[in-house]
Image (cartoon, rainbow, N blue to C red; front, side, top):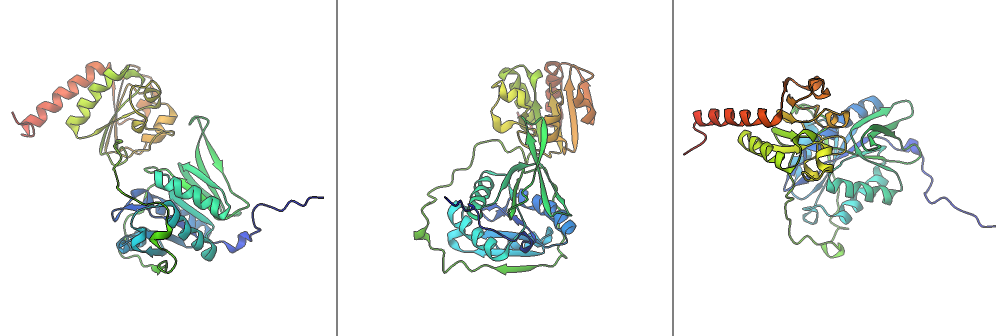
Length: 351
């Protein structure tokens, strides 16, 4: 007889407590998604009656550790070493693996960025647990202490709730721009606990070397204050040229619905929606976008929405502050003309 042993070691789930949030940063500047997840984590920790812990890893970034307390953290685990200046999978995973074994968190939240997705999956494999990717909602079943990680499924047509009931920590990555950070409060107090990694962390032991950092050329929708977005009604690549002209005048960027991306009219880094990016601009101009629920999920946080559509019954108008029923190829040129006139009156355009 062959005896099969379980692939994962037996753990006592009751030993695991607290909600952790990884604070991603670059060049000493924290990513907004970390503070957004602290806001969600604060709600979950309060429901569970446990601590909210921020994990900061880097070099000379103690100021970030203090900021996490102002944004809701009770405790900060802080690893500071020159080797950790730039994100690399191996040392960051090593540190998390040791911290998880020592401190036993029940929930770990990480931003659904390129680096965050890489780190979350590695940690999950190391500590033999599950990870739910690209979550747009986070809640908790208090009675069973289960993280309810919700993410788009079936092409964004439904939201799936994923639980991890037999392993710890419960790991989830949260999509940037979806959750709201708490208001910064400098009166908040918390503890910063330094993690000593200098004796075990050596540059020569790390296989990956960062030679040069080349910034991504993709459009940054999530920090844009003004977004001009196009959908099926734009009718092709030529139509997007008009949107670019208006966006440039307004100091904004161009986005798109999924159908415009799928048609090949614009690249996927411009996509807004459940299967794209979530945005929170001051102004969102929806051009030829019908307003499917998948798209609304990505832009519903916009402060002011202007919709342009030939169909007076288009769902997008229900989510708009201002609606224009008309042909975008007639409306947008007029908006461009008026915007130019206003800028010239202000002396912004020079001849």
